[in-house]
Length: 213
Ligand SMILES: [Zn+2]
View 1 (tube, rainbow, N blue to C red):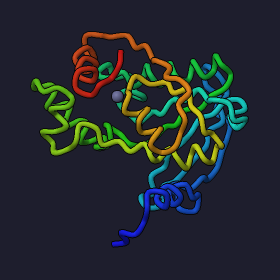
View 2 (cartoon, rainbow, N blue to C red):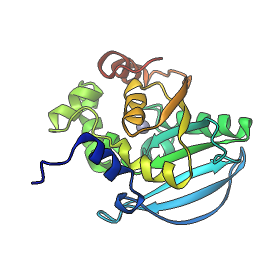
View 3 (cartoon, rainbow, N blue to C red):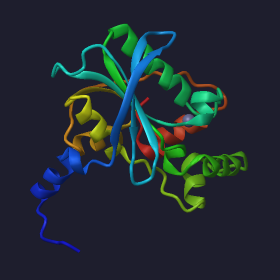
View 4 (cartoon, rainbow, N blue to C red):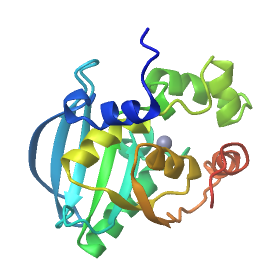
């Protein structure tokens, strides 16, 4: 193991595009009900995992970019689940970017806070039996949140974004972005409606994971 790397070296290494864990592949237009975005595809060479970014307007002009970092949630984003707030957050973020005419959404394929789809369904089964979202993940041997936001760095660099107006209720996400060298000009809250199915989930996120609602 090389222990001679200083902190400055470590930053220099992670900032180097040739050392990024993500390769940019291709872009296309993506019409949605709110705007026609640009959709950019990236691949993680080490795992073959595919991630995307949606952008709108001129985001490479150096001004703060209204941004959302969204982790994949098949049940919430695609299957209309009311167990979580992912689907409404995704829609609200795209709508807000469209209203502003400028912004970026990073869609990271780390399902179930990083534990994967099948394990998320295992965790849901434990929650059906009474556990909360954090207890369920821990009972399965996972940390409460296994997500890795460093994945964003090569995407942000490719899109020439350095300052964010970050749409999030999660202070950890702000800290994670600052850790990879992004400037946060503003936190933009995402207001999500509670329902009888997501009520306990949202409360657990606030109490145990520090989310702001
Ligand atoms: Zn979800």
